Image (cartoon, rainbow, N blue to C red; front, side, top):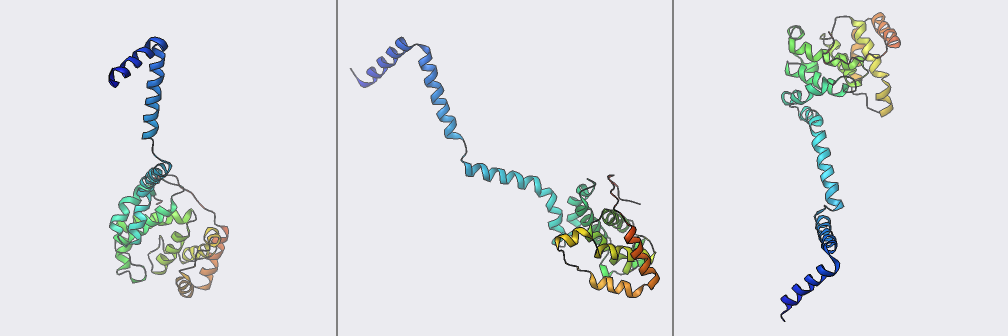
Length: 222
């Protein structure tokens, strides 16, 4: 008797002796072994999870990356929707606001034609987003307002308001707790020198009475 026939006879004998449950169990064991063999290894699972996390976070960080590259025209495309998410997204609101102002022609100390820029609708939208973030306590936004008041492009022409934002930036608790360097000390010194002492002290008093305002709407403050 050939080996093939012997194997066939053995299968038939097992079926007659054990019945269908034997073959059902054997099939289950075979299928389970195949499934286990197809499962990803722990390292593959970690890599897949990391890729998924990057895919989720990429839309958030892409705007910040483009801003850091100096590509504000691309940055605003990613930042606008995040900025509109409201409270808790003040960093995105600040970045979106600054980039929107830059796209309108804002260049900090080197900004040309400040008077015409103040009337530019795109610049006003960006400045309003910066103001919104500053009202919520975002340090960079507060510092940017100091720069805007310094060149005469602030939300208003009240010199004491410029002093207020300078004092708020200097005493910003989150900035101090994180040890973030004061990168606008020269601007603050320059602003103080241009203001009357009464306006500087009035701004300090306003900062003392200030409290954060959080706006959950999707539009910047007017």
